[in-house]
Amino acid sequence: MKFESKENIDLEYSLDGGQAFRWWNVDIGYRGVVGTHVYILENNNDFISINVLNENDDFQKAISTIRNYLSLNNKIDDFVNLWIDDPCIGPSVRGYSGLRVLKQDPWECLFSFICSSTNNVSRIKLNVNDVSILLGEKIFDGKYDFSFPKPEQCIVAGENVFRKIGLGFRSKYVIDAARKILDGSIILNELKSIEYLEARDKLMTINGVGGKIADCVLAFSLDKKESFPVDRHILRALIKWYGLPKNIMPEQAAIWARKRFGRHSSLANQYIFHRERLSSRYHMWGGKHRDLIIDEDK
DNA sequence: GTCCAGGGTGAAA
DNA sequence: TTTCACCCTGGA
Image (cartoon, rainbow, N blue to C red; front, side, top):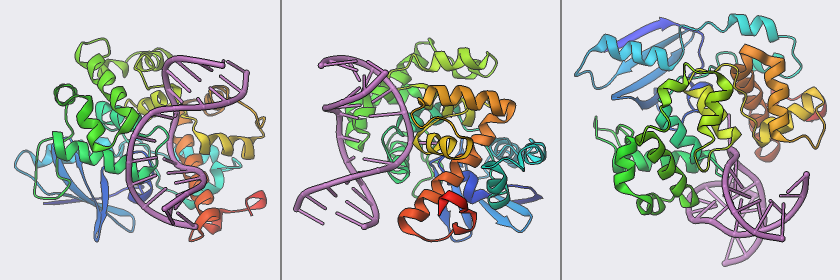
């Protein structure tokens, strides 16, 4: 069954731009798993179509799940209007309109970003999907149609299984995270309702989770709009576009950005990240996205 | 075949 | 405050 609606969202940028790691480009759109449903999502001009492949339970529930995941009820016009003249975000908003911040499952998101440290997107995807296939439950007929394993299943599997899958030194980190969830010292859903900085400190008690990874989890799964993850791309962009000192530390840059962007920090972060990532790719490998490159970018 | 970077973090120097 | 090890995959 299909559901169509008029939405301002670009699926490629939002689903396959480094926020989530379980979406695959198939000929008609993006295929992936959210919770226990398999979806194929497709952009058609101003519309998106949502196709639920396994509709054994409530179709309406599956639609509301994916709408929430895609954050479709939050309008981004407010953000666009306010930052359209910003030196970095302005061109990015024009070039990549429809980029959105997702609301992923917090545990899957935490796991994914623990995997992200000194890693590249293609390998993160490989790791996260291998974990799902090996430890999750099969929910439909596709190669990647598996639910994401719960913390308990990760503990049962043990560190060596993750080493075998190829998570490397991150294996002990995901085990520590699973253990802290399981023993109740961290309750992910509770972090939604407590204050941003407190939630951040709590996540950082997990071994292998520093400020950057904590901020990704807060922004991409816990709906903390004041979160601004700073990685190497973002740091370079902040120095280039906003004149921050060349030797500024990531943590200081994050404080500066949160102050500037306030309640729009997480969205601003995505637009800056997307632009910087694609322009640095252009410099390395060529291809599209030359249109945005201006001034010192040349 | 070799080299290198990739959405970092923690521990040692 | 700075430096280094940690895994391993894909592209040059």
